Length: 418
Image (cartoon, rainbow, N blue to C red; front, side, top):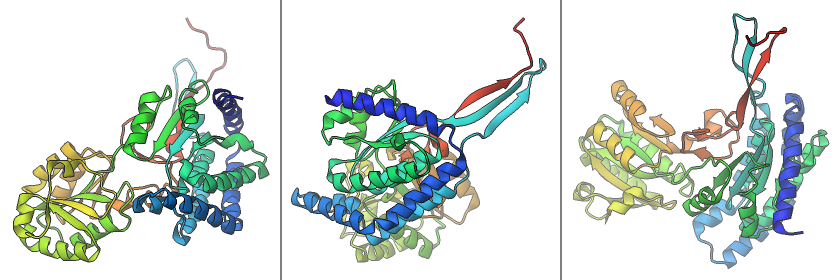
């Protein structure tokens, strides 16, 4: 059977499964996700062994450190995967919600009700936690999902998908609610992107090159995000201790993820006393600073920033720093160079905070909080399948509710069109 035929069969199975899921009760779907969590725990050793095989192969191919960090399942990440499944299971059911409703003068009862999107295709690199997150979010929202993880995580994802399918079947739901492509061949991805008859939306997660390739080749609508060029602006009145703590956490808690800080903007009114303290704290954390000329006049030992640094997602212990003249300049810089992902401000002034919230054009805008908090778990959404920097169909963290659409349900008692 050719790759095209295999993918067509995968799409057909997913469509059938999606129809069954759309009428499955919330309780059954919740039990299936809880079963996923239980199976994850019972297969701990098998999952870790598979991940070690993937890690060894990636290391042998000279993968960089950031890539290996995304691929590895540590004790902490395993616990995180398990907890996210349990959180997703307990979330309110996003289906069957009456978004609006009214009765027409004719007596027609008109309602707009949330329903699943149908079949979701997710194409991603490295991170095995996407596999469990995607299965949970799709099932919670009544969608079937076709997963295509990177070949570098082939062993790990194979084990995880098998466990997810077993948990689903245990609740009487179709195993094909969760499928993975049977071939690591890139041709399989191209064929998946042509399945517009069966797949309703594609969500790519990975580097810019992957997302651009998917967007340009797909016949199916794409929910995407490009770079996570995230900013933190330290306003003139920023509390010093808070400013330092939030900068270090935003940058260093995990440097290789999309909501890690990449550009720090420091108000000229506090730069002289705040930048030296930031240099000490970031230096202790192993971060290289690249600064504008005004920053270097205060910190002469740091590297010089070029224009390209303002548009770079490092995913590494490097931070671009710029001194700006007030909130307006900070907002202007963010809206010009940012990627619309996550941007924050540190301030004690309510008016400045409100201006920043209103005028920064990003999916997530934070006041006095780490950029690392922009995600499903810290927003009370549980597991998510990505963070969208677009405006359609979703923006920001894409969780179960974002994977729904709606239908109009109309009840009458014999009304005719006049």
